[in-house]
Amino acid sequence: MRVWVPVDAAARALGADEVAEAVRREMGVAPTRNGSRGMIWLEPLVEVEIGGVRHGFGPVAPEDVPAILAELKGHPLALGPVDDLPWMKRQTRLTFARVGVIDPLSLDDYKAHGGLEGLKAALAAPDRIVAEVTESGLRGRGGAGFPTGIKWATVARAAADRKYVVCNADEGDSGTFADRMLMEGDPFTLIEGMAIAGIAVGAAQGYVYIRSEYPDAIRAMRAAIDIARAAGVLGPSILGSAHAFDMEVRVGAGAYVCGEETSLLNSLEGKRGIVRAKPPIPALEGFLGKPTVVNNVLSLATVPWILANGAAAYAVHGIGRSRGTMPLQIAGNVKHGGLFEVAFGLSLGEIVDGIGGGTASGRPVKAVQVGGPLGAYFPRALFDTPFGYEEFAGKEGLVGHAGIVVFDDTADMLSLARFAMEFCAIESCGKCTPCRIGSTRGVETINRIAGGDLEAIPVLSDLCNTMKWGSLCALGGFAPYPVMSALTHFPEDFTGPSAGTGVRVEAAE
Image (cartoon, rainbow, N blue to C red):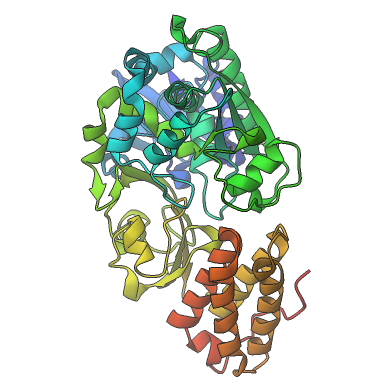
């Protein structure tokens, strides 16, 4: 009998380590520690192989283990074959195909499930890598949605004695956890993607910049890099080829602004994490002044699938200029929260109501914030919006890292608008005036509105316009999105009789 118990941080927070120890005691051998399948409401999710098929049980407590192993299909927590569960069957798992399936630190397991096929294809035709990535339509998964192939082509053409590949794993948006889940559940796919990027642009060194709040991901990535290096996947001769590529993990200190690529590069160089003015762009003058590919975890981790299966097979998924799949991270006041990978194009309503199952509280959905703390709040009137970059931009919203946070009808939108401005004020690097001063004035202006001064509303709109167009980076430029969407779609929370009752009015620090 083979048993799997997740080692994912979310599952561990819910007691997976204790469940794994209970399995070890009952069986006399340790279970395989896999990544999470993404159904967080069922964690810890224990999987048992029955007749060659993995059956799920969850959520499991340590005291449930003896009866589960004895009764199997007859146990009350039995869910049936995991791959047949509705949550799993509705997905198009490309980037996350192995997460939850394999032992994250078994290179043999990784290869048995298609790992390294993309790297082999890249080594066989290195001159085709950039074209394949471009033709796939893959775009940045960290926020801006910039075409990955164009960035790689720019670095590949740049003349320099050294080039670098940097992975932005500083996943700081509220309601996002895909980067963490992938690094903990399938770290070799990120290593493979970075190695392919290095071959494509002529870089021999890579760095994974991970936020300090992700200790499990840091350990998993460091262990996987050591294993890959020992196996010849990394080092002076990748898989015995003439191409060299090595990489290491660097840990960030917890500044949200370091999710912006130039601020990240400053931090990586040991400097204060503040935004750089552009031009020059990092693709030409990035890490240590050299041409640098800076991509998100999900962008780099998707590249091996594209190289192994072809650009056309990836581009067939999605809508418009949003090609391929996106791992949706559904969180907040929602019945079924977790990670769900699907092709671009589902409506927001299908995601929230159909996949997420509505609110956990059972109350009506009032608003959904997409794209992290700088994303717009969408009311139910906009739930027909297809999930895609241009489609969301057309509604004054952003896809960002695809964090989807659900709020029920008890949410105070004035309070949430104030939080967005205060967040920006606290996290601003201070480099530019619109962000540094504008966010502080924004908190003060919202305090005035909360106190009943409705003449401050036009002032707030004016201030948001200045921040949107005058800020140096997306922190100040996008902070107006949640504020103005709250004001536009939920005006009664700003002007009604109960407006301001839930707002703190002390000044931002």
